[in-house]
Amino acid sequence: MGETDRIANFNFLRNKIMAFTNSQLKQIYDRSSGYCHLCHKKLAFKNYGIFGARSAWEVEHSNPQAMGGTHRLNNLYPACISCNRSKGASSTASVRANNGKSLAPLSTIKRKEAKNSNAWAGGAAGAAIGAFAGPIGAMVGAIIGAHFGCKINPDKN
Ligand SMILES: [Zn+2]
Image 1 (tube, rainbow, N blue to C red):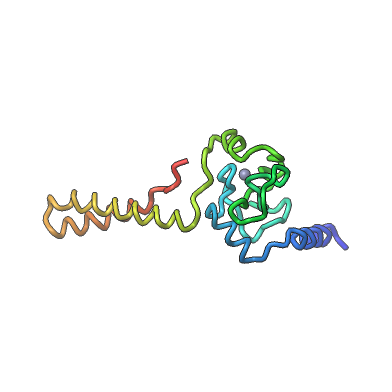
Image 2 (image 1 turned 30 degrees about the vertical axis):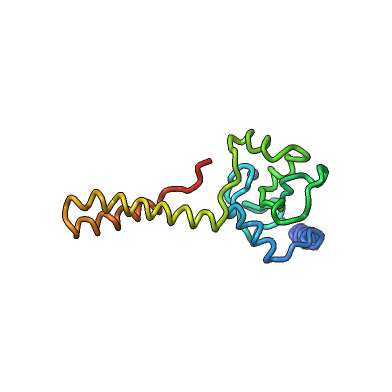
């Protein structure tokens, strides 16, 4: 058995031990739109638990198990392997603070909502500006405004 096979086998066993179903993993991953909840680095969903793979990630207990944290979804977040391994029993807030963050990245649902409201606000602002140039101007303004509204990153932290 070659080195790659050994690693693959190890990862396979390890994922079995972690015992998350694919849909649970997806739910956890979406909680922060696929960003590490501690350092906000983008994670690769397919590289879950594959140590050494690009953008690999693990499930992190926000409140550490050692401190009474549970396996419930509201205590589970995706984290890059280096954050997860170095966090230990530290609090989530202190690790985020070390990374200059105060909150977890927005969830997929919240991100969509924020983008929509940005698009709406952008559209309204664009329409107001375009209104000076008549109804066609308002329409063009709204489209341009919505376009830029969508580009605003909803993450404020
Ligand atoms: Zn991280």
